Length: 325
Length: 235
Image (cartoon, rainbow over all chains, first blue to last red; front, top):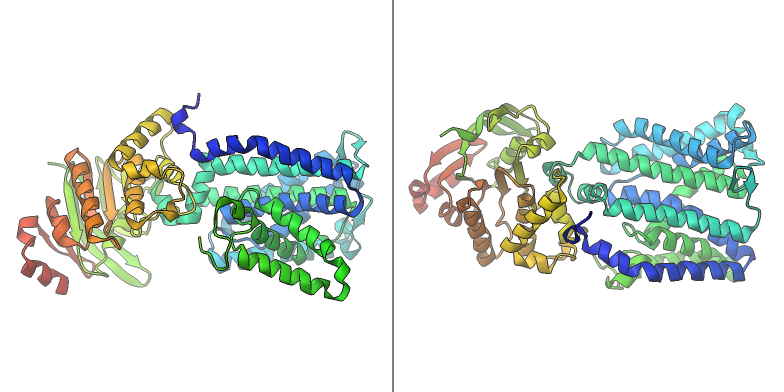
């Protein structure tokens, strides 16, 4: 039994917040049911991206590392789902699991030598991962059908049951994103999560306390890859199509924008960031020629006035430009 | 008395520079040993090399075992714990989490809770700030946390790298006095420090490190004259 003395103050706060979180979840479902059309599409993409960014947050926000190559693992998950469901007629859920396992194995193999690098060198090495994945998707015509991509991917579902109602799809995707974020919360509050936080703070100090820095960095990379892979699989199932462009560099840029707008290192940051970045273009679409300009300015204003991200605003962090950690 | 830590011919590089040159040093069980020296003398490199954070050559015995080939983690498991320079506090994590990380290698929750209670007894201010982000603490509180985190590991030997760095004189004196208390309760301490007059009052023996070599090994009485200290610092 866990003694009271060993319950962290953070966990006690989270327990107090649980009813409020359930209320927000119920409200989200009610809004999805009440509205339809494009709003639900925005929610679906935001939920998928929230999962993708949660993995990125674990590696960057919690562990203090940099990766520009998470799109490689999203592509692995997406293409694994596409190939396994359309050619081998595997169940979408089984294909998703296969994609995640493949991504974990490749992340472990690639991460072992790559994670010895630090800072800009690590950033460049991971950027190369994404570029290699893109080239493989383009060049391996026999498997990926190159630029044409693969279509006809079965929708969200399992064991022969396909969810064809978009509102239900949004609820399921939100539930999956919530599960992913919940798992990230548990990880962050575990002994493993504290070790990641220590690595982010000072690798040398963490090592001096007995933390196996190399092994934990690799684990964080593998877990982030699994998150990206599941997001890629869900993207393939939701859209019904994959191509190299779906998992291109724009996915990385979008992921980073969501991470910083929502709040890096903050558990709810990925979902908030994903919702804002997905919804903002639609909100300003009436401005026609000026919509890109207003979208860009909107993001800049958020980053200037909430440098720790929107998720940090409710935690008493000064809501003013240039506030430091 | 057999030495708890016995170092023979330890050399280490800091980048291209040979920062430690065949250093011999010993610390007996229950002793408070001070390493003095000016900036760039190799004091921090010495502690990093002892912990295995940087590669070095030479022999390091801890207790009955040779540890020079062991990983940093294995050395920590044997009770060699270092409080790094600039405290090495994990800023975004709470005080509670920082302390938990100190006991990272311990598996018994009850034991960890007991150690935390002792740390809170020694530094009551940490209990008050338990759920606060460590980065938001004052310099003195951060140093208390760094020492408290080291104590959470239940060290056999506590090595501290300039704990008074950047602190107001009164706070620095408090911190050093706490180290004296810990030593009197039986903890072996190896302290690297520039604030010589304060630290010399607590130590039983002192080494002076100069340009990566041991320039002298003295008792505090022998070193306490300003003339003696200046000679070593300016050498």
